[in-house]
Image (cartoon, rainbow, N blue to C red; front, side, top):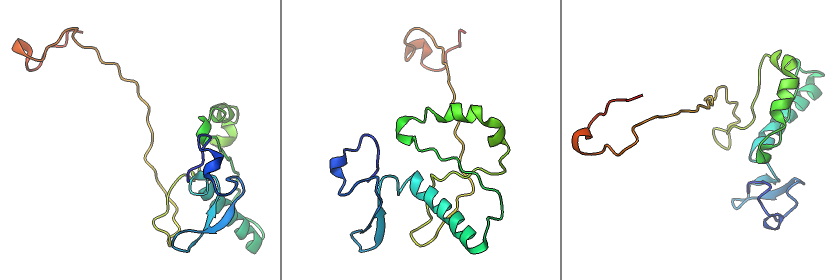
Length: 145
């Protein structure tokens, strides 16, 4: 179940903010909690990987800084001011890892190396102020602007 501020707590069989090990209908072990199948689940995979690497080798091979944003359901209004206030430090990063991606399948851990970008555009269209769908103007009409 997706967790959001719109999901009533009564629909949960356990506290959505306390992870619980459970079995799905096929008997597989799963973690049930708010966000485990969305950003937070993938984010924890990355964090736990860093912890495991450090436990085995004593340190990470590169400097790692984490910026965790968990306002997906509330518009993320705090992220732009934070990024503006910290743009020098954020701009010094060599790589940014976004954790809102998917796995190839249940058996293959995946790292997505590219995503399509997002562009926001505003388009203003001006046109004639009367219906030109038939008669003399059934085809192209000259742009009067």
